[in-house]
Image (cartoon, rainbow, N blue to C red; front, side, top):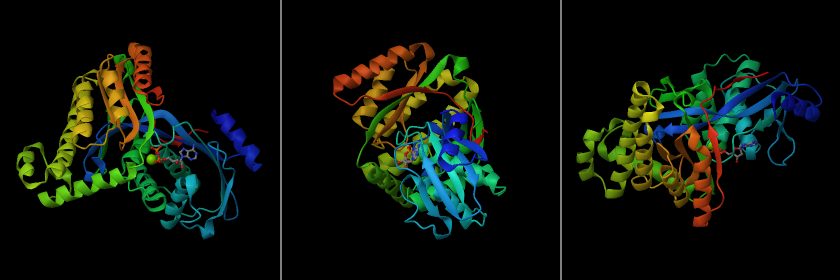
Length: 382
Ligand code: ADP
Ligand code: MG
């Protein structure tokens, strides 16, 4: 749906025209996985897939919400009796943001909202943050809240943590809110300091291909919690506030203090933080054509040390590397979701064919394969 069609759908549903349309992108994390909750570094970029909300304020306390996704119909709630029970299903994302803003003292009354998103859901591209950031950006303007982009990041994170109940960091919302076209966001998750890093893939004749394996493992949530617990244990035994404070030079000593599994978890975080720093330096010096080895090393670390990959992700990565990719890695929380491959633009068709064939040969389900490019962050579009 284009913006005019989204506005038309809003009008057809609610019987009046929207006051505006706000969009926020999903993201790909180029490198820096599971480093966010260890107060480390990440390097995501916003992608050209967005969640768009059309909104009109009402003069009562009723909120009506409809998404073009699925067939759930219009959800109607009274904002004055908003509770964790009434913020359920997909509406937990937009209503969670409204709830957090209201908790912060921002005056938000009733509204009608139509949501249309082109970010695939559950593919590790953060369709959830795209919704939160579009809604946060919209109400920041509609309620004249005057919150900064960094404050809106925390609003989205609180909605995700406290309302949806997902214990996520600030990576997704930062990418969605802080990105600009043709750049990645280098983010220090301890200080929330960020820096835009040029990522001009097209000029280098490159693109990033996403392979959405469509695999969602039942143990993804438990695995995530277990990895967080291992990292906390590692930090405690090593006597640091967070694994961010451990460097490669400390690893030799850490090996003697930690059980072998916790040591491998810690080694992933420590080396991954360094790879993010190295990627930023290489992008600056030599450009995106030279970061492939870092991406592939990141995948090996997630597969062997952090143990969050799966056969489908490994196959996507190995097939990409055997077919001209400069580098490839799983991206997102792991145990399924998507892999990314940095490839010459001219190799796209061949790689697509190779991945589909490899998945068919292995008896895996058909993956979704699409190119993404660095795109602008959240903004008003109409
Ligand atoms: P990810 O953020 O990686 O895509 P999440 O599990 O965090 O995965 O978020 C997916 C959830 O976001 C879906 O289960 C759904 O509740 C919500 N969602 C995503 N896209 C839409 C949409 N277009 N309309 C309504 N809800 C959506
Ligand atoms: Mg999400």
